[in-house]
Image 1 (cartoon, rainbow, N blue to C red):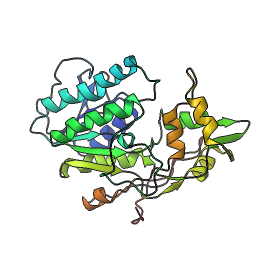
Image 2: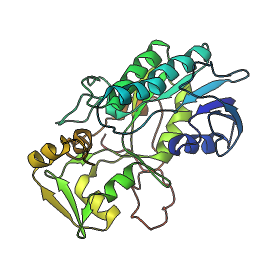
Image 3: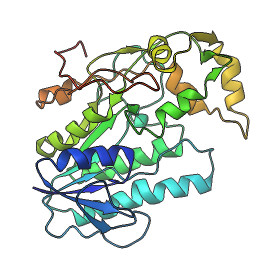
Length: 297
């Protein structure tokens, strides 16, 4: 197949492009070339329609990502990519299979008592990222696309999760709000594998995550090499609401809500995670990928 991949110059998109190039012809669609394949320029914030001539399928990963302070400027910047850019790529891809990579951030904030299925409400998001990804999802689902919802993607070259975790270490301790919680994480290899497998799935939304449920404290201790110490959630949330700080309410949610994704729907489509090794300790090489047996989620 000839597969167009948007966002291929980024962390997740690059992983998808490299995996796709093993068996397919890859077109990297974006402002910058991807790690493999041919490059076609497209800026998701501009009104030009992307060139999908000769393309058999599309995997759309280009997105505005982050946790900015609330405001009209941030909302508009995220909407320009995650909603308006989505509308243009879907219009150009009419009649072609499309996999649209969303995020578990579209789900209504927790805390969560049980694992989340795709039927969990996707509203009341607290950030421009969550709100605009949810709006983009509505467009993609209405167009008959497959929508993937990974949570906390990690791996070599990760520019988001690991840098954030490093900031919680002070005085040789990892300071975390509230008690230990279960959570889902997604290896970038699993997301890349799911993106290509999903080209043949029925339209709809699918959770994507590793095949294990992690414990927050044990995972962070293993990754950072620092013992965890707990601090009360209330004062931390109060600090997160202050302007100009590095903490945000959304960031606190990620550490306290205990989000576990039920990946049963993706399993029923025939997908299995290719690795569930978990984030590696900082400074150590990645272990070889493995294919675990079926887990409980």
